[in-house]
Length: 285
Image 1 (cartoon, rainbow, N blue to C red):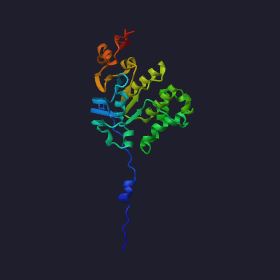
Image 2: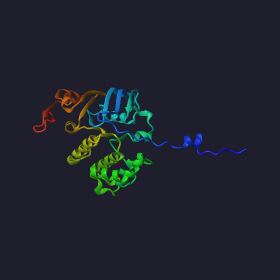
Image 3: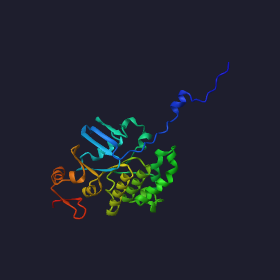
Image 4: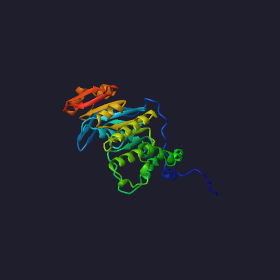
């Protein structure tokens, strides 16, 4: 008796063969690329977020502001799928965040944490190229070189592309880490205090990059402590206080004297810029 040969893989082989991740489809402007619904997150038996509802939409820059301990970074990490919810849910690209495999999630969101320690002496260009890893094995991999070059040019790190990452200044590291995020080319970009270590020029540069990314159809969430930057560059500002959303809307609606004075426990003045009308937030001194 002869055994029939077949080219179909065995069941075991199918289980052991990694499935290629499926890139996300382009999103129409205004599509919710991430959502938190009645989100509650507890850290060390303390509720850090409690009943948070928020949507992140394609074509929009959303700034998260609020005092220390308000839950901004925790909310960003929950939207990224890096922190589990005690209750409620987080959706990314229309599905529960924990339903995505790690490779699929990496194609849908790119994350810049507050700090990006890297002990090994990778060159800056190598660090930026790490952002292309989710696209390995896909048709988009042929664009790796162009994506890396574009990201380095946008963040002004191309001049020191060959330098070891650990040898950079704090601000240079921050920009190189942002270039890695941009090279990832995900539709959802989550940035935790990207301007904290930067000078005035590079703060404005980073926020202009956020605006450019939104103009290309991505959703950008950025944690900021500088209320002036949030007022000038964000389409929406969500003010967090005590683990809840105190206000969510256009900067002129959310960044008010009464709300900010209460949330930050310090009296502030909010004045319109004489040329642009953008809110200027000044603490009473």
